[in-house]
Amino acid sequence: MSTADWCPTPVESQPRDPAGVQSTINLSYLCQNGWQPLLITGFLRDLLIREWSNPLNIISPEMKQYIWKEGPDTGILIESVHRYRADVVEKRPAIMIKRNSFRNMQLGFAGQIFGGGMTAYQNEKGAISRHATIFTGSHTLFCIHKTGASTEILASEVLGHLTAFSWPIRRDLGLRQFSVTEVGNIQELEEASENYVVPITVGWGYEFVWQLKEQSLPLQSISIASLLGVDGELGLGTPYQGL
Image 1 (spheres, rainbow, N blue to C red):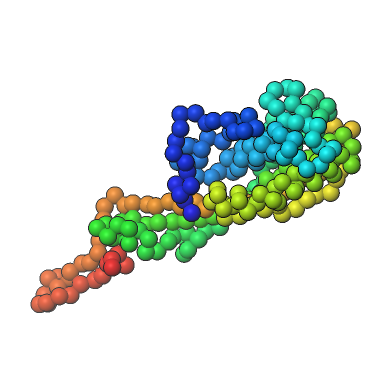
Image 2 (tube, helix red, strand yellow; image 1 turned 90 degrees about the vertical axis):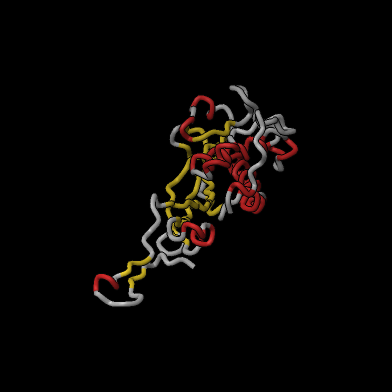
């Protein structure tokens, strides 16, 4: 599925939603370039910010007091691990997002989709080839709080939200896979010994499709009758004979 199938009509500025939050994802960039691991990091942050911007979205009564808002006085920190701040985390709960490694899974035969280019471009048979691959990987969300019990409650809240929305995320954003794959054990946070952390891993997969066009049309056949001094049709064909 191409992002062009679901991309909205571009607007001058991204409007704020009812929660008063403006998206951190540039949809025009996503529509033009497709998914990237960095964009999934931003999407996860954007998704969690929307949950924690309104207490009505939070199920656990203990967590409703920690409301996210832009600025240093936010009730909960939701950021990439590269923007970790120990002084802020020690004072409030936090969800830190980290990208893990990802892999390339080629589709078709060595990544090539046969027939696609020849069907779409009948006047340039063999000159255009289509290719596709799937990138699969994961992100880990570190749920951090002051006590073991509060950290478990925070992790359960995040887990429930991600699980409940996994299906519409896959469907509406064209991802091949998006689901919670693992919840780690609770442990003390090394960077802040008075805090605890529970890691939640989310697996994802997205398709990357592209096409290659040769600068000149491939040779379709060679007549060798004149070379051999034979009358009639005699030639050598190539795989690029078209339909």
